[in-house]
Amino acid sequence: DVKVTQSSRYLVKRTGEKVFLECVQDMDHENMFWYRQDPGLGLRLIYFSYDVKMKEKGDIPEGYSVSREKKERFSLILESASTNQTSMYLCASSWDATKAFFGQGTRLTVV
Amino acid sequence: AQTVTQSQPEMSVQEAETVTLSCTYDTSENNYYLFWYKQPPSRQMILVIRQEAYKQQNATENRFSVNFQKAAKSFSLKISDSQLGDTAMYFCASRGLFTGNQFYFGTGTSLTVIP
Image 1 (cartoon, rainbow over the protein chains, first blue to last red):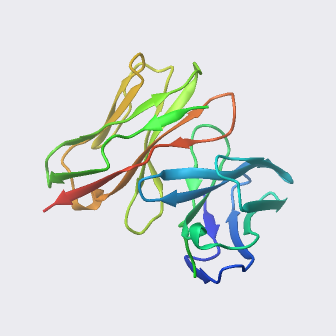
Image 2: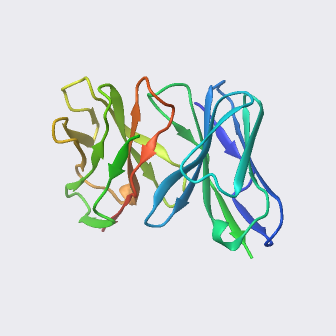
């Protein structure tokens, strides 16, 4: 089975800190995604990557950046964390259009 | 771009009964996939069922089936013989086959199975 692993399940950070959320997949997938999940808003795409060093903005990229130096790893970076970035963050990967595989999620709280 | 709409934020069903979750979508593409994902309280999102838009036959996976109405752009999920383990958030999603890489998700329906 495909495994998508997010480095933390729970994270508490202070306002203004630089925050790194890491995601690793073990199936050589081309595509990787970072979503933000908020109640009543569903999953909103922050960024996705379709190859090493390639990235595209999603629907809500402001305040975030990403890095994909190796195919298996896709990092989400909050340059200067703010309280309105408190949320659940989900990483996903896919080979094609037939299925996306998700990590277990990271609950980030910014205080 | 594609949009996915789930108009039922919360639903409940008695154990062993049948429940239907609604989803509508909008896309300009001819070839696409539609999905229902389940997110239990443990949070790992898992695929429940998938429908290929060019297939007329509705997909079925054990107790889960869909009613795919392509002209109406409707994609509902029917859960038969509901079990306590079906309690979860359910997300409807779509993705074009050839254009773009993004999966588009609805806002979710929180389903509670009552013993």
